[in-house]
Length: 472
Image 1 (cartoon, rainbow, N blue to C red):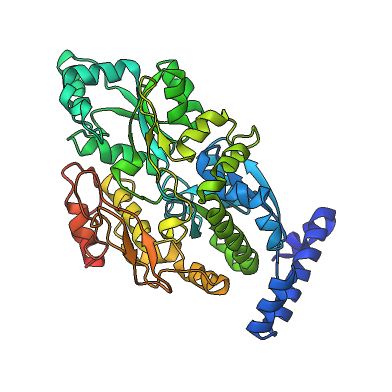
Image 2: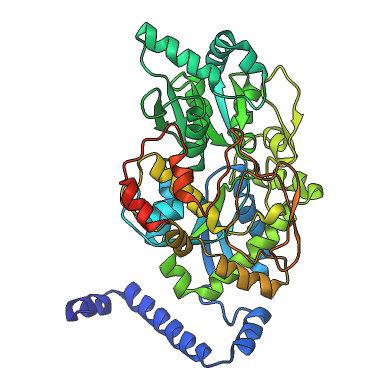
């Protein structure tokens, strides 16, 4: 630190106080380092002695899958582990990214691809970001306007009667518009590196639609989707709940397909923190994850789902009618207002199927999609990159302390299991759910280049040969 910087700090009372506090923390951390690990852990578990930063603020977006953070706060799990938590509802994913990046939030509800994008500088200045906790599986849907739905039924009534609904009829509508000289239709997703963007693109591309050429994709924050559909600014969108069911309940749209149908038990959100923050406050980070694991387990029990609905529906969180939130959260799904809800027990999974475990294979899948759609153009070792951002090593240590079942491997193939199965590569066998893709593809993380080259529709900008050298 320069003499000028030192003088400025001494002249500013708030900075003097900050320096005193951080110096105290540094001394405390140094003293704790001299204590044997077993004793140190015991002292921390008994109270807040080992918590470097007891006052924490975590960000959320108003979606039903903010539940683990909200439940950990409302049901006292954060407090149980020595954290005085506050929950900040943010307006957009960009807000989440930026506030975590500058330290205005200690951690946040993040899209599964956000820590990857933040670390690699996709769409923003690079900021090393990690996740050691997956918040949920599934939770999204694709909804279109009544007008577009009618056009799709007219274009291909047979395809529209088959579920899961493909984009085959949409392709015919797009082709008809091209022939008539009409402008491309506008669809929305919530963020460029969101699961929603990749799911919408995956669904469209499976029918031969090029989402970068055949339609217009824009970003709209989740709570604003319904209003933009109603005002005809867009013809459809991919978003998390409750904003698909809200459009259905209002009678202004049809929910075509869920992400569970596109890829069963896909990773959706994570708890993200700056790498710098995690290294500075390791016990605080561990405490947050322990609280989140317990909250996720509680929220995943069917007998607790009604209370989850009541809590997260509040104005300070999702701010939506309980009846709308209840529909998907309690295991049903409604495609349109004329049809009764259908069972979809795994639409929201918070703990089952090792849902809280940050699989490196999931991180690698998101990186393949960033390459597929031209968001990454420099060659990287995908597996090494995934391992620097998703941190199952941290989770595994926490699971051991808590005595809960945990996978012993970090990579798994997706698309092979059509029904329930058991993960035996774990400290205790873990019941797992189906993991198939609706187009029949298989994702093998040991064959990343073959997977990436297997897509018929791709707008990759990277030198594939250079990428292949790093990913043999």
